[in-house]
Length: 87
Image 1 (cartoon, rainbow, N blue to C red):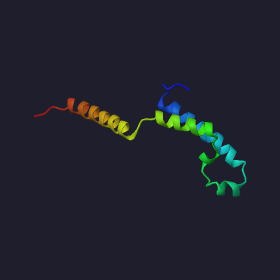
Image 2 (cartoon, rainbow, N blue to C red):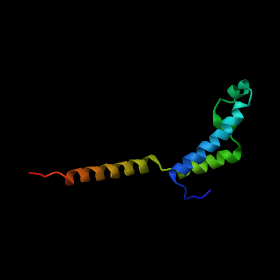
Image 3 (cartoon, rainbow, N blue to C red):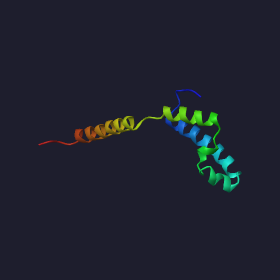
Image 4 (cartoon, rainbow, N blue to C red):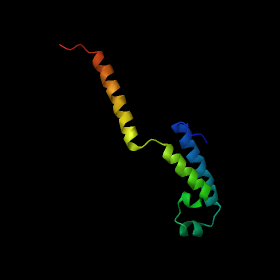
């Protein structure tokens, strides 16, 4: 997979990894699922875990998301202020 994936593509890839692991979990004896902790990632292969980690590192962090949100807010505020006459 390319490092130039969109956020939506990354989330889709993560969902596919989870779906494969969840399918494995569903065919496993419920007692074993409980003994393993019951988490979907417990049923991922080592390669899937590594891919999941790589994909998650490609997602924006909370600071990046906060900065993007602040920029959008500033744009909305400046667009709203341009349309008003100040007296």
